[in-house]
Each structure stands twice: as C-alpha cells, then as structure tokens.
Image (tube, rainbow, N blue to C red; front, side):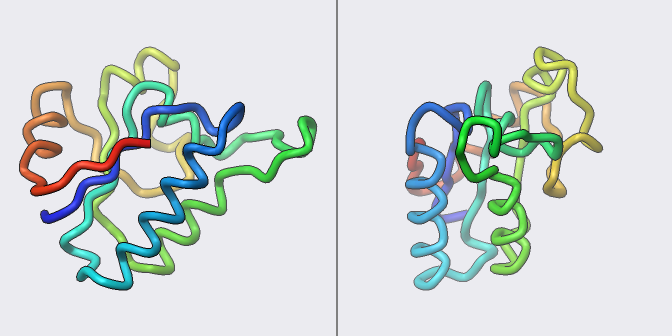
Length: 119
C-alpha cells in the first residue's frame, strides 16, 4: 500500500471528512485502487454509520462516501475493533464493507503505507 488515508474526525462539525474524501478521490486518479488504504479510527467510524440524520442539522450525510469508495473500487477499508466496541456498533451497522482489526494489527497495516494522510 502506497497511501493511507486515516479519518479520525466525526462527520459533522468540520469539513475534514469532506476534504479527506476529496483528496482520496483525487489520489485514486493517480494510483491503482489497490495502492490506497482507508482507515477509520476513533470518531472517524461515525462517518460510516448507516443511520444518520444529517438533514436535521442541514448537512449532507456521509453515507454517500461509502458509495463513492465502492464506485472507485477502493476496497482496502479498515476499522479498529476497539472503536466499534466503544461506540457499541457492529460491522453490520456500517455503510461500507470493512475489515475489522484489533488495535495492534490496525496500526501494523496503517504503518505499511509509504505516506499517511490524516483527516
């Protein structure tokens, strides 16, 4: 994996998630999709929850991110098992197929990337 994108912020309250998605999609034009890894850590996993009510706060939900990642065939998506437990979520509650890794393996996989971009 050449490039890793790690999403650490919640989906609302700042533009970091949208900026990260824009950068990720731009990078996919220059790299093979197998060279890109997407990591959701801490509050970042909240962007993947299926049940979002973004319209209540006049925002766009981030579930569309999942659709774009699948459209661009970016399949290396990872979440940390401890974060799922912290938010009392299951893999099935997420809008994107992900690989669930324990904390140690999550960071081993992340640090295999040549470049890491954090959003």
